Image (cartoon, rainbow, N blue to C red; front, side, top):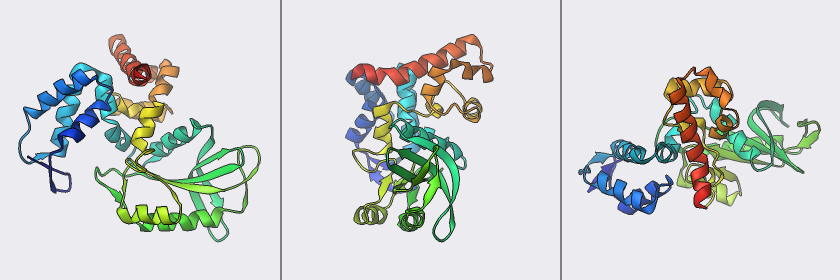
Length: 280
């Protein structure tokens, strides 16, 4: 049986890959098999990856909202758009969780030209210039010209003094981060020049999807109990993470939800953050 990708390409169906993605949702082994069997009964040759995703999402949600929320992470990152402003805020949260002081949307004068730095992150003697490449397309890839350009930007700002976080600091390195994919040429270029590249699936052991599952830093757009408009309102009020909502449930007051729905939203949020920690 074959699956049609968003590009129109037909590829063989991979049952093990589907099982693995279902398991990453936090579902138990027994629940994974139940969902897998349910999906398998509805498969047909040429089924689209979108339809396959929607089948899995619906089946997982029948067990728990939080399973579907975790499974929908990739889609949730695309909802941090449309221009990627909130994606930059979310990336700042990832680095802040590692002990960095962070600031977004900064303009600095380099040796040659001025640069807009999406995220500045500093810790001890280190200061990073982080460039975020947000993409709405499901299968979007970052071509090799982007890391080439990025390397030149980092070179242009390194070695100069800047006032950040109550002191004079120098940029020591940079990160190129995307919610999409890097082409093979981009990866080879980055590896050769020792660039810090971070994408949905790269590097394999520390990619975005694994970092989020390991840290629990899920964007609020993951929550299945909220609609698109409600998520947009929370983002506008700087509620970027599901953790933000748990730390300050008063964010929900901006949505004027019925008490029963508000309780369901918070229950999903708690399950999403704490269920994996419990499994550990």
